[in-house]
Amino acid sequence: MFDRISRRYDLMNRLMTGGRDVAWRRLAAREALAGGRGCVLDVASGTGDLAIELARQGAARVVALDFSREMLRSAAEKLRRLGHPHIELVCADAMRLPFPDATFDACTIGFGLRNLPDYQAGIAEMARVLRPGGRLVILETTPVRQQWLAPLFHLYFDQIVPLIGGLVSGDRDAYGYLPRSTGAFPDAETLAGMLAGAGLAEVRFRRLMLGTVALHVAIRPCAAV
Image (cartoon, rainbow, N blue to C red; front, side):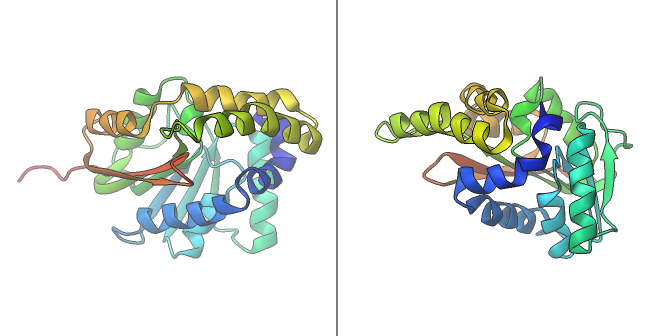
C-alpha cells in the first residue's frame, strides 16, 4: 500500500493537515535533539521529512528506516534535491531493527507507530537500540476526546480524506486505511503507559491540533551505579 502512494505522499500530508505537519515534525526533531545532537534513528521514515528536519537541526548522524522501497526511493530523490546526501537510508522492518543494542542517542517515529502490527513490541524494539539516556519521540494521531469535535473529526477522516486521497493519489482504498488505523490506536494516556511499560522513564506528552495529534517523549534510563 505504501509503495503505491509514495509519489503523492508528501502532498497528501500537507493537504490533510493544512501544512501543520511541518511544524509538528520540527517540534519532534527539537525534542529528539534536546539531549544532544548525536546519532538519531527515524523509524517508519517514509519519504524522509522527519529525517531531513533532524539533519537541519544539527543531528550528527541520521538513519532513516522504512520497509517500503518506493518510499525510500522518493526519500532518496528528495535528499539529493535538498542537499542532504549524508542521511543514511535503510530498508528494514521496524519490528526487527538491524542494529545492535544501545546504538542511537535518539529514536523518532512520526505517524508510523499505528502501522506496526504490535505497538508494545515496536516500542520495546526502539527502546532496545537507544543508549542509556537516549530519547524516544513519537508523533502520532490520537483519538479525539472532545464530544463536540468527534463528529467533525470522523466526517473529515472517514469521508473527506479518502475522497481527497483517491483524487490526488488515485488510491482511495489506501487513504481509507487512515481512519481505520487511527480509530484503532490507543489514546495518549494509554500510549504513555505503554512507554513506561517498556522500561522508559520521564514519559510525557502534549496534545496538538485540538487534541487529534500527540507528541510523546520518553527516556531510556541510565544504568544504576
